Amino acid sequence: MDFEIEKLEKKLNGLTKVALLKLAHEEYGLYHLDDSYKPKYIIEQIIVAAREKAEASSFVPVRRIKSKSIRSKDKPLLIRKLLTYLTFPIIMIWLLITSFNASRFRPDSAMELLTDPSWLYNWPRWLDIPLMKWINDWFKVFNKEYGVYFEAVNNFLLGAILSLKHFLMMMPWPLVIALVVTIVFFSSGRKLGTTVFVGICTFFIGFLHPRFWDKAIETTSIMIIGILFCIFIGIPLGIAMSRSVRVRNATLPVLDLMQTIPSFCYLIPGIMLFGLGAVPAIIATVIYAVPPLVRLTDLGIRLVDTEVIEAAEAFGASKKQKLLGVQLPLALPNIMQGINQTTMMALAMVVIASMIGTRGLGDEVLLGLQQLNVGKATE
Image (cartoon, rainbow, N blue to C red):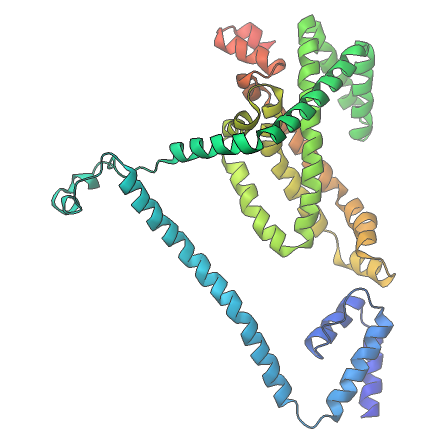
């Protein structure tokens, strides 16, 4: 037996920490061991468990107890799945009954549905959910109870936009162009051609007409605030998705829904809560532009090589050190690509946001389209 234990110890010394934890959990049931323990301590615990296993006369009762505990753990999961499958039919039946009882055009008796099959060819007027009334009633109560908080958020965002706008307006326009050129030069990998092209385009904003420069400053202020909010929300959420399967499974359907709904619909919650102006434009921009950043942050962290992570664990790095020193630096190209996609999608909301009173370059495009002035819209 000592020879087998010695042979096992040599084998364990050649394994990584991840492999040791997997062996300890699956073969010996040492579930109390985790990443916080050193490999040497894990090996000692495995050897002690191997000795006890070799000295024991029978392991059948242990296996029975383990399988019984697994079966007991599966019961709540089965109940949750059953409740999930039953919830949707129950909600659907409740909606059908509610819409039938609330309709003014419902038949006098249910027998009319059997005797008159015309409702099968044209959608019946009594099969209509009063969703508009429900939402309007709910919004009145919600706005009455929590309107003060949204007004505070509105004042904060509006103050941030106006402060940034006044700051950019006070700067000399050559300095603004130089600042844009400098940012593009370093963010593009010091590509001279791209830098010169962006500098010329920035100059042409005011060169086409002086008022376009002021409009561009207003649009830039709104976009900067919106993109900053996207970064503050998207990157932490992407990190949480990469570290938790439950968070990922719960977030992915929401992101799919956000990228499926037409962009104009994102103005509805902003207008409901904050009225017209720049603040609902920021809310719509964040909802519309944040999903790519969340997805690409999650993807970048998940694509980090497991051998690099194991090497960091072998040196005793904590979870925070692995995230900040290994995973985020290696995932930075994907994160920067997500910020790029977020910026492009935020700019796509400029014209749409102008429909709710947001001033800027989108306002000029919308005005040119309304007047059928092609030259004005092109400028």
